[in-house]
Amino acid sequence: MPELPEVETVRKGLEQSIIGQKIVKIKVNRAKTIDNISVEKFKTELEGEEFNEIKRKAKYLFLETKSGKIISVHLKMSGAFLVQKPETELPKHTHVIFDLHGGKQLRFKDLRAFGRMGLYNNWQDACDKGAVPDLAPEPLEKEFTVSYFEKELKNFTSPIKAVLLDQKKVVSGIGNIYADESLFLSGIRPNRPANQINKKESAKLYHAIKKVISDSIEAGGTSIRDYVNAEGNLGDYALQLWVYGQKKKNCKICNTPIEYIRLAQRGTHFCPQCQV
Image (cartoon, rainbow, N blue to C red; front, side, top):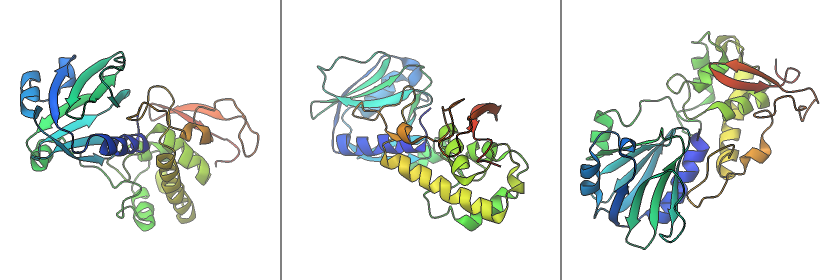
């Protein structure tokens, strides 16, 4: 599933590609992709509109038009935006196509078909109707400070990985990949109770989270299965992974085999030697 770095990479790509582009025509191949409005109204409301700004909150994208209308998008597990020429072969499972004035198409493809789009009159309307989630601070936001992080962890007895994955508790935008990687870099086992992590450890984890998220954004995200950016390119952060997806491979630090368990209903990777 695309996590914060992947969605931010998509946002940046769309910002470079479609800002100032007018929507000439919309084709919807899968009606269920449009979440809160009829397909016909979705098309009627947006055709003739011009993309003005691309926003993101955690794993959610918001495409704002010049008149202030908001297209909310959740990529879910396999959703992807591609900006391509009309003559380019249409990818399988392309559910929505925006014909743009500049001659290209904005295509939304989604192999597993869980991704959704909604349309709202303006940003306030989107907030009022729950399209803009009420989440914890993101790792790179100023509200996410080391003192805040340390204090909030003390409120939870559940495993630290479960706390990191819960978008509303302490921090938002961290998914399975980056939770495993951050916990490895900080030397903390994923099943440790959050409230038993001491001040020194929480500081190490805080800085590890910020580093992992920043490095992944710089690398264009992580491509494990379906993720590609708006140009159709893979993210390179997979080349930097320490534990995620490394089951039974030797740890790059101590040569101990990486272990794999199920935790918080997610596959979890860790080094039994480096993480305590």
